[in-house]
Amino acid sequence: MTTLTPTSELSPGGSAAEVPAGLPDVATLARLAGEFFAALPNGAVPQPPSGVGLPSGLSGIQGLSAPAALPSPANAASGAAAQAAGSGGSPTSAHSAQSTPSPHALSLGKSSPALVPNAAASNGLPEQAAVGAPGAVPRAGGQALGVPEAYAPALPSVPSAPANLPVPSTPYYFLGEASTLPSAVSGPSFYFAPPAGSGSSAFDPTVVPTPAASARPPFDVHAIRRDFPILQERVNGRQLVWFDNAATTHKPQSVIDRIAWFYAHENSNIHRAAHELAARATDAYESARQKVARFIGAGSVEEIIFVRGATEAINLVAKTWGTKNVGEGDEIIVSNLEHHANIVPWQQLAAEKGAKLRVIPVDDSGQVLLEEYKRLLNDRTKIVSVTQVSNALGTVVPVAEIVDLAHRAGAVALVDGAQSVSHMRVNVREIGADFFVFSGHKVFGPTGIGVVYGKRELLEDMPPWQGGGNMIADVTFERTVFQPPPNKFEAGTGNIADAVGLGAAIDYVERIGMENIARYEHDLLVYATRQLQPIPGVRLIGTARDKASVLSFVLKGYTTEEVGKALNQEGIAVRSGHHCAQPILRRFGVEATVRPSLAFYNTCEEVDALIRVVQRLSGARR
Image 1 (cartoon, one colour):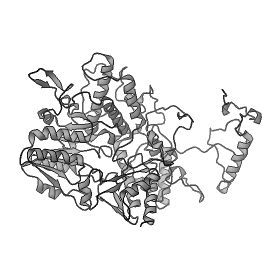
Image 2 (cartoon, rainbow, N blue to C red):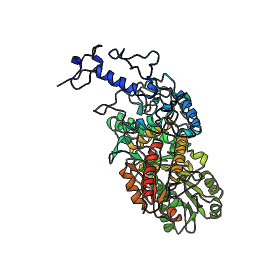
Image 3 (cartoon, rainbow, N blue to C red):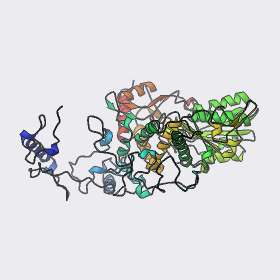
Image 4 (cartoon, helix red, strand yellow):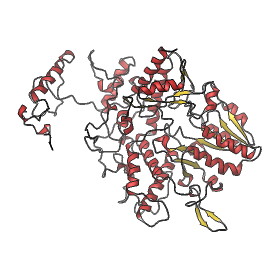
């Protein structure tokens, strides 16, 4: 076996005889470096910062000095804002901001140096060990790399990370350790056991372990991208651009690691066992339930039911609460914006019971007409079921007002949050929802796991949906006594590992901060809309004032499938079709759209790549 000599072990003289075969000698490196710096504008040669020296083998070489220090996040942000103001809003990089920029200075613009894998080694391993949770290690750069600096003043003010962030005590940050974020209480020796002296692990909704603002690093989209391994994939020889986030989101490494850890160290069925792995699995599962309750502002963990996803969640409510409470002549209200999953179960219930399904219309922008909704409400209305964010158009629906009007009419209200929980802060008690549902895979968690939130008094009055193990308290051949909620609705062996993975996904987005995510995505959506809308032949479908991260459009002269295929050739993934929302698309006279949908790991550079393809197609339009 041949062992290469590390370059750090070369003697100061660096003679050619001491250099391993195939590597250039120091003299060649020095000559190339001198030629490079001599070719810089004005013959500028960067000077080393104080305290930074060159390797001994390269010291004293004419024209060669240490690289300039990277700016601190605060300095980079302030420099970026100043440069943006002075350039008339032209996007430039925070790294290239200088107090007196040279007219020939290189502008990185919206380039994404972090789009290449962080690991440069041929074996794929990182060059250095992680010292914090993904996305929580500060990198040099501006407050929001990837957003054009013309929009920088609109971004949230996020304090810089402290200089001396603590290193996690173990590499298993995904088990719940706060890592670089301060912890409210010191954890027990065994993560699956309650803290000593705590009595019980009862959920307290008033206690929200939000890290101090000073502990949250600046929002760096390129650092965040490194947390998502799939974003390093190449499609058709191009870097993958994932604009299909409304269909599913990708998973950060911490979620992948957490699920793998569960199967390697905790795998067991939950509840009713005395052995240690059952205790670990149960605590991990119930901890995930607590995280969900906190994440959506529920009043109790008993109000959180794990299901397969939002579709199953709505079916559960329709086939339990609906079956018991909706009768002949009663009415169910949905909006024109709904996904098929929030239409079909209610149609089935209405057909079974002889009830009527009524629909809230929308205006030409795609927003619901509240005055028309008020006219639909009456004493026969039993339930109102609406989306918070349209999956097809991106419209943000005023659900709090819709829920309040439903309650005044004596009806209950379900809110479909599948498209909202990853984009904005949700609090079910502030909304007033009786039921709230979402899917884990839409919020950077695993597939096959979702949530039903239901008010405790409603859940207690509802019959179980499925029968079997876990949901019973006592069984004889004469009768069965059911467990109280939420176990009453979780028959059989649930998706334990993916519930735990969902908890890890919630940890991840909370470390970044939902408000930071919402602001970044809003600015990215504004940027993409301004770029796409003027292209000849483009028609945007859904132009409501309040939108979240969805651009739905058609291009004259092309089918949506043709546009989708052209984008795929450039490595850009979008959804083309009816998006399981045919009624709302037909409201706008189309059967299908192209739907780019954004997430906080997308960049303006990726938007530009999409725009170039659409512009090319537009110019060649038949």
